[in-house]
Image (cartoon, rainbow, N blue to C red; front, side):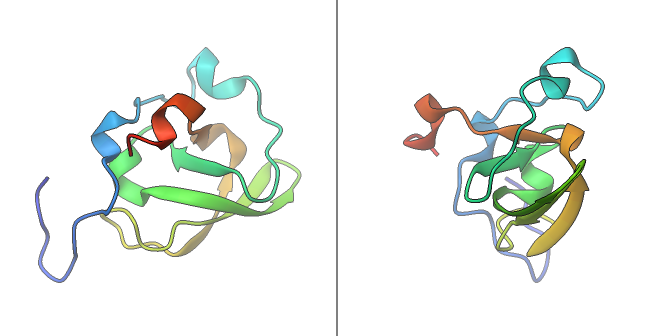
Length: 94
């Protein structure tokens, strides 16, 4: 993973997460997020890293990424269609 100046690499193996574009059918289904769920930014997992759902307000979700991605984002409000749940089978490998 490329290191940018001033940024540390992610503590997670983000390359294990599947890239899922927002317009893809997989990104549009099963979108009932709840507080506490772990998710990632589907189109580019390494950008934001892995985050925890903090609040859900209609189509928007507040996610705490804790600076785990390349962008160093801590909390962001995003449209649900950009977020993908982390599959249980991959949690222990990350």
